Image 1 (tube, helix red, strand yellow):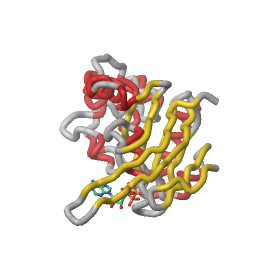
Image 2 (spheres, helix red, strand yellow):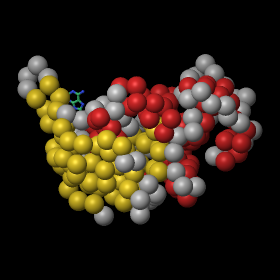
Image 3 (tube, protein in one colour):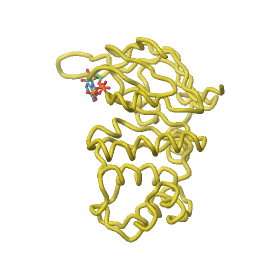
Image 4 (cartoon, helix red, strand yellow):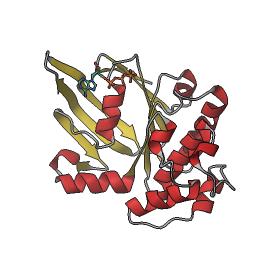
Length: 222
Ligand SMILES: Nc1ncnc2c1ncn2[C@@H]1O[C@H](COP(=O)(O)OP(=O)(O)OP(=O)(O)O)[C@@H](O)[C@H]1O
């Protein structure tokens, strides 16, 4: 199995007025290009911080992060930004955080594509995600699960091959969460790399690889 991310001795410290918090402590692992990798663990164990590191939103304090063979720490700021924009799609836990509420569904997809200087066919993406016919709708007319589906759609519109989701089901009722789980399975089957952070047992169950975190450390991978 090809490995997409290679983490070696990754550490992240945050300096607060009171002290230094080590959010990630010496994490060494790989993340494969295929399947669904889930980071699980109690609150405060460092899952979201690690996802931000993988999403190139935040450089680690220590260690080496290779993405597709490239040492991301050796890249200039512009190189990291280009990788982030072109390859990595982030989906956050609050559905509306991922979308522009003053635009329609289709306009959100077009705006996402434009960010990556691409064009897209909104109807095609909406059909693939089971949202056919909603192109002209306002975002508020979609359910929370449909909004999260559209957030994944925006990553597709940008041409991203890697989808990183931070607790994508935590704000949703069961039916809406089901829509998101189906979408993640579909995208993994389509060959996208899907990576998620979650407390949700049902999301952890669909993981093809589950990395358990505790106190910033990796506690095991199954
Ligand atoms: N910007 C920051 N400044 C200071 N400390 C931070 C910052 N971000 C995270 N932390 C601390 O780092 C540790 C890991 O936080 P993180 O949010 O990554 O954990 P988590 O497992 O995702 O938790 P949750 O499931 O509650 O979101 C916690 O102790 C948190 O308080």
